[in-house]
Every structure is written in structure tokens, then in C-alpha cells.
Length: 424
Image 1 (spheres, rainbow, N blue to C red):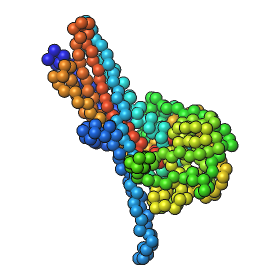
Image 2: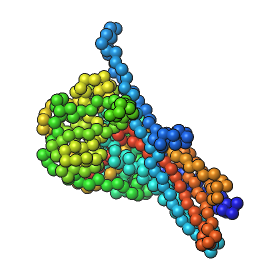
Image 3: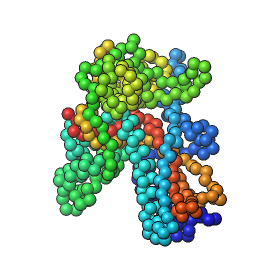
Image 4: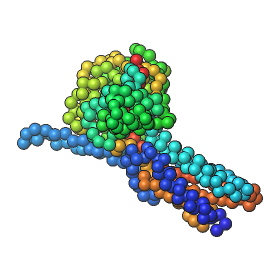
């Protein structure tokens, strides 16, 4: 076929695939959702992924009055990313195999970076566990705060990851290099020689060359929310929602719209607590004694916010609320104070439990013999990369493109969060 790849290009493709897997560092830290391409096409590239049930237990033989329905929650996973790197080589440039290799490597690195960024973005933007630290990154205690918060809320104590910005990671390494420095101490020597931190406080840490930023909250003091039962600012989990036509569809319980006194200067990404609303252990439902942290997802108007997680305080008393209760209102007030946690601009250091964030690999149906040369490869993480080649006889130029189709979903914002330093 006139547009087929040369033998040299096919050999280079094998090298691209192997290096692509190595570059996708973030995809090894999240779970993978495998769905058939036909099913995704029929569902509009959206699939609803079930969340784990949470059950209640009671004492005694007689359980009269304790039988209850189980509410199955689910979240939408969407193939929302179509990343493409197109480039052109003319017939003269194509004579140089080194240029061809360089162009291909550049495209591969960009696609890998896009996929890694997508994982980091959902962790940074939707993670609801917020740990603000007043000082700069420095010691074990900083990361241990993240571990404590996850433990208190019943998040599994394995497969936990923390990504630190270069400055914060190196600040942690500096502490290891000084506080434990001694000859023959591997942890100390690696911190001093390579700036390596490794596993700390049950988190496998890694260093980011790029970090998302969180701005200082613009919403000033004095913002309040009515957390009384009568105000119905709490959420009742549900599996389905009904349209005005009576049609029922799945419902996304990760987010909730609340009404507050004013949303002036409040922005997406802001983190806050509410006076009197405390986090509970997801299984035992006992209060942790620590205020529940929330994130702003969007600001629809002057008095409403879309937040995560939803306030499932059990104030409505339904079975679903009792099963998925995530906080308790210790003191009801019409003017419960909202306190923002991101008081100064800072790098975001996301952390999460592996299964809380899910990668959804996609697939393109581009067949050989369709008029372009086609090379495909699937990484061990399930990401399919497609490279196509077309020669335009009018311009004497080769047109290449590298494609990847995928989605990333934060299935459980309460199992992921952010660590931010310098918050006063």
C-alpha cells in the first residue's frame, strides 16, 4: 500500500510503545475500567460504574423494624479525552531517519503527558480530603496527617499514592537527608544524593515536574450556611432520578448543590469546612472529631454552590442516608460559619487510594487498507495508541498523526484529596 509504514518506521514504533508505557507513570497508580468498544459506542461513550455498598449492622436476634432496602450508587465514566498530535514531514525531511524518530518521540511524550495530567487533574480538582499545613514541606508529620485523615474515615490502608511538587518533594527529602543522615543509612543517602523520598507514612510518593496550583480563596469571612434539618441543605443518596416526563435515569451522588449566604468571590477548587459538621468513619458512622472538608466544583449563581462530597448527615433519617452517612451535624445553626482552607496560593499535592480513580481506555476502529498506513499498540495499562500515515502527492508531504482515546473518573472523591503547604 502506498501509505504503508516503512520497515524502519515499524521498528521505531516498537521502541515508541515500550517508552510510552514507561512515560505513563500515573496510570500505574490508578485502577482500570475495561468496557467493550461496542458497549461504549451504544451508550454514547458513557458507562455507569457501580460504587461499593455500605451496610448497617444491629445487635440481637429480633430484627423487627431493621430490614431496609439497599441503595446501589453508581458514577458515570466517560471517554472524554481525544488527544491527537499531528505533524508533517516533506519528502526531503523523510530522508533523515533521525528526524522521523525525533518527531515520533515528541508526539509520544506529549500524549503520555496529557494522560498523566488528566489523572492528576481529577485528583487535584475533585479530591475532597483537604490537609492544609501552615509551614513549608519539611517532615514526616506532614504526610502522616494525610494518612490519619484517611484512616479515620475508613479508607483502605493499602495502595495509597501521594504526588508532590518538586519543591515540596525536595523539602521532604531535605528533612530525611539531615534528620537521619548517617553513613550506611540507605534512606538518608538516597535523599541526599538523589532527592529520593520513597514510601512515607503508608504513601508511595513521587515527584512531579509540573504541579497544579490552588489560588487563595476569594470568599471572605462571614459566609454562612443553614445546616439545620429544616433547611434541607443535606443530601439523600439515590440510585435514580426522574425526569419531568417520568423517565428514570442514573444519578451521580458525588456532587450536591447547596445554598449559602453569598457566593461572592468563591471559585471552583476552593476548600472549606462548616462549623458543626464533622466527618465520620464510613463504616462505623462514629464521628472522627475532625471537621468534614469539602471542595467547590462550580458556582451556579449568587447563593448556590456545587460541592463534593455531598453532605450526607442523616438528618432526613432515610435508609440510604444511614447507609452512606459521611458526616454528622453536632450543632444545628441557621448561620453556620464557612471557613476556607486555601488561605494562600500554593502547589497542590494530590493523594488518593488507587481504586478511587479509574482510567477508561478507549479504542479507534481504523483498519489497514483504509487509505492510510496504520500502526497500533496497547500498553499494559490498556491505553491504545494509533499512528497513521498519509502521503499527499500534490504537496509531496507525509502527514502523520498519533491518537489516544481515554477517560478518567474520580469514582470516590472522599478517598482522594490534596495536601497544601503554607496555609496560614
